[in-house]
Image 1 (cartoon, rainbow, N blue to C red):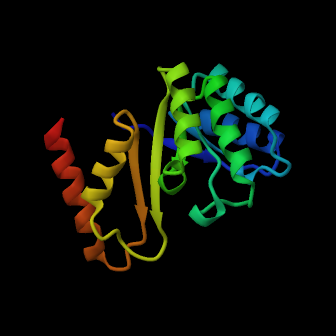
Image 2 (cartoon, rainbow, N blue to C red):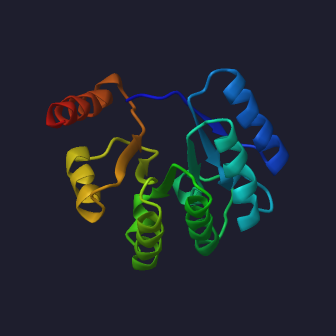
Length: 179
């Protein structure tokens, strides 16, 4: 199943909410709330954004990216983790956590418990390399799946040449054959 997901990257709750409204008006099928863009982020902001998006019948992905993984603001790890757990409590359909951070025991435990309390939601575990392709993307996906079998693995990397895309296409083709 494929959805057109539109990121909302407002610097305050009002501008992000307006971006969500605009995405819906332009036929977005899903919205990604990039909460690392919000200034003055706190846990209350999460509910103020997740609930209205659901009111528009838009599935919601909540991301609060680590700055080393492409995040916009350098929020502390505890706040970013709290935001993802709060998003699940508020009914987010998906939360996206960096694979590098999920490997920390406290992050894995907290997110696993939060997902278990809301089985309709899904965890996206994303790995990023902003310089080059992954050496073995298939092995990375298998590692993510071993750690969290229900998680959706997401790999994002820099393709420096058209040939760098072929490994991703091969991976997609092989995974489609598995389903």
